[in-house]
Length: 150
Image (tube, rainbow, N blue to C red; front, side):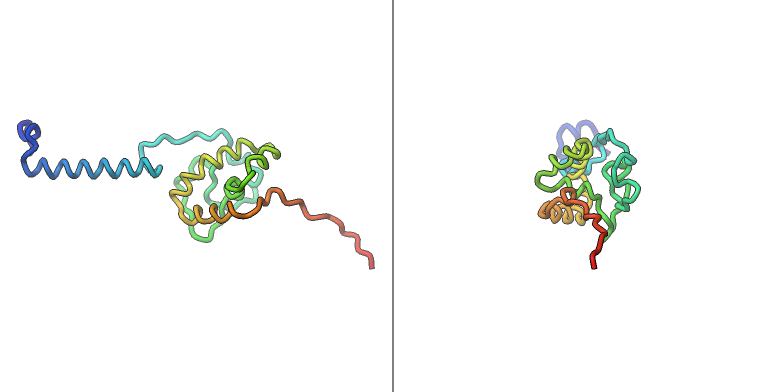
């Protein structure tokens, strides 16, 4: 047991070990805070709810940044990734989202991207790949010309 005299002098063997353990825990906590994985971190409150997403009814992505519990969900390799999360990574995406009235959705996707990238490497790689491709939100819908001459 450490006494006050021992702590004041910092010379006994148990105190030296205790100091090293405390220092190691401190360094680990600093790394967690820097990487965004700290247990003490405050959780951001989203303004939009998950049902306000335009693709909500047909989406099968397990990680949705609009879902308040997305941090507790698992993502397996090969599972779908949120369409709007991928689109938010591309050049000029802020304008595209804004033109469609989805500016708030864009802001939430951009805020969630660092946390998601730290937690799931497969999503991080997919987002990096998506950033290099053209936007799918800019595509024109297929023509509905069904008249055939023949």
